[in-house]
Length: 224
Image 1: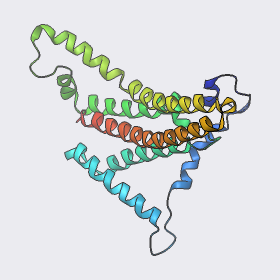
Image 2 (image 1 turned 45 degrees about the horizontal axis):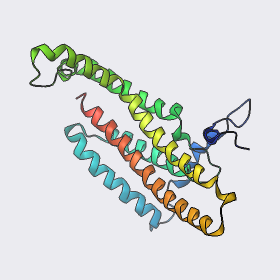
Image 3 (image 1 turned 180 degrees about the vertical axis):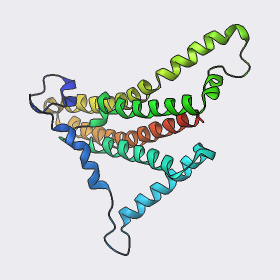
Image 4 (image 1 turned 90 degrees about the horizontal axis):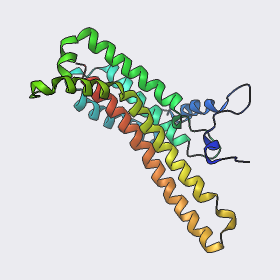
């Protein structure tokens, strides 16, 4: 029995262990494999997606583009997108809806960018704290504002992802919880709304993965 709405996001399956996090490994099932000389349609779609992402990241990374950068951001996109998509299946735990997961990779990326920027390009990092054309009297305030905005970046990345996933799932739960007391006509209407929400959630899962990978790419370009 569901005690409250947020119990659907409870990662605990028992008092001794949490097995729901194993759902993050289900994304391996969606990775295409090359078994035959002629590629499958799924593999062709997968390669088309990788090509589109590569072209997109090449524009953002500009002169800083290399194979390692592309591997990091494309892997981040695929991991977040597939985790969001897996959470739409019944009885599968959505790991990307928890800050434990989203904050982990956001902090890892942010700390890596900061260490690289302050060690390799310290002068540029100091210059970046004061935008060009700032009056001298406002420079201390701009340094404070830019420092705070830089510090909260991993939090905004992780909260944006988790909040969007949680909001969609809660809305679907609220609508479906009234199904037992509805007439046949309103039950069909509820099913239609749920179907539209599923389509919306699929698009949200892709958009959020794209947003977090693009923002991570932009943050990395600021350190070079």
